[in-house]
Structure formats: C-alpha cells, structure tokens
Length: 316
Image 1 (tube, one colour):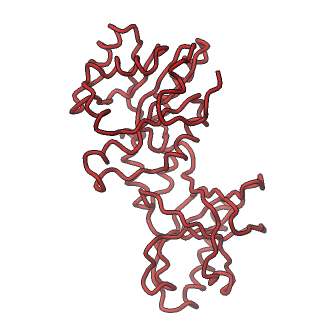
Image 2 (tube, one colour):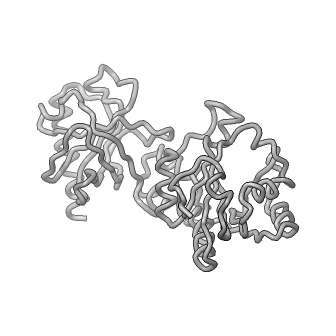
Image 3 (cartoon, one colour):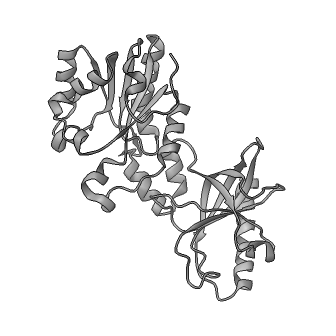
C-alpha cells in the first residue's frame, strides 16, 4: 500500500493489512531519549514485516490547558515529521490534541487506538507516559488494557546523561542558556535551523561581513548571541563553516527589532541568492548579543568573533 510521508489523522493506516508497531509521544526534538522509544518500534516492524508508526500531537498538549502559557516547542511539526522519518519511522500520525481527544478515559485509550488502527500489534512508550482524561493513565493501565486486547505494550526506561534524564525540558533550558554543546549532546545531533534567505538592510556587506538572513523565530528561542555554525545551501551538497548572530540587532535597530533574525556570515567561499533555502547547524556559543556604541565598534567585534570561530572550526 502507498503510505504518505505525513498524515494528520489515522486514515492512512485504517485499511493497513500489515501489523502496526506504534511509538507514542510528543517527541519534541526527537532526542536520544525519544530514540529509545522509537527504535524498538522500528525494529519490531522490520522483524515482523510490519509498519512502524509514531503517534505525536499537535499542538503540544499543554496548549489545550494553558493556552499561550503552554510549552514552547523546540522544533516545528514539519521538522519533527522529517526527523522521525529520518530515524526510520514509516508513518507519522500528527493527531490534533483537542478537548475530545483529551476526554478519552484512560481505560478506553487503547481501545480507541485499536479502533483507529485495526492492525495495531504493539505499543511503545516511555516509562513515565501519562494519558487519558485527567492524565490518570500510567504504564500499568496500558499493560492491563493491552493484555485484554492482545496488544503488546513496551515501556522504556528514561535514558540518562550524567545521572540526569534526557528530556525536552532539559534541552529547552540549555537552548535558552546558550549551552549548545549540551543541547547537541542531548539531541544526538546538531541543533538545526532552516529557512529561506531574505533581503536584509545590507549593513553586513557595507562593513565587510555580508550575511545570509533568515527570518526564523522558533517557539523556544535560543539565547541571543553569536554562534559558530555550519550551513548547507539546498542543492549545493557541501556544508560550509560560518558565524551566525541570532537576535534583535540592538546596535543597528535603535535598541532592538521586534522579531529576531538569524544572520549567517560564511567563512568560506560560497554564493547564495535570495529565496534560496539553507540549513544551519549550531556548533558552539561564542558570546551574548550586545549593543555597541558605534557601527565601527561592532565591526571590530565581528572581526574578533570571526577569528574566534575560525580557530574553533578550522583548528579544533
């Protein structure tokens, strides 16, 4: 059967004739802790000629109950779906987390999934998974329901780094603190931004440091500042080294713009046109964004920053 790369509901698998092995979670960041849940589902599907699927939620469940005070996401749904497919998941079910879904009782949760996915054979969740109305369901509830319905339930212990669980919460805190090395170690890959190059004020070109500008503003914003990065222009096939500033540019925008901008200056020869898409991998935090007394002072600092990044990326 033809399986789409992204689905917004269960319909794509309702008529599936192969066993379905389902990982469940928000999976924001698709970090190493998530892989501990996802990879067994993928392996079971391969071993049993089945379909691996991931059930995730959009928006984050906290948004239903807390509105704008809900959890800020590390990555967009589009990026999450691409990452899940990249680690081997066949189908991503992005379920709308609304009041009707939140009202399903814990005891009826697995029956609901089986109704939507008649070929459901196994479910994989983290050991701390909570579900059902009032979040009263736990792994014991899930195992009892699975036993009655003939569905295997696998609970995965939380993966730890330096004695602390790997979690999306830790990653968000590290992002906001500019701790890129910690972010990348918890993710298991480099934190990445992507977007289309837009026209800027061209000040960088005037002072000798031309930049590629991305109007990129994730929910969970990294610390404003200067970073060592690698970037890839779509279609080029070659990663380049660079330096980036993420922030509101207080020196040239009268104290700061309303929305942050990601500006990338290449430290290697490259050519990038407007409207081209680029991916940016964040390697290391260099310094905080700050307001300088003059453009000349900013120019001198950028030159120092470039040298620092060159020492890190070319000699590290």
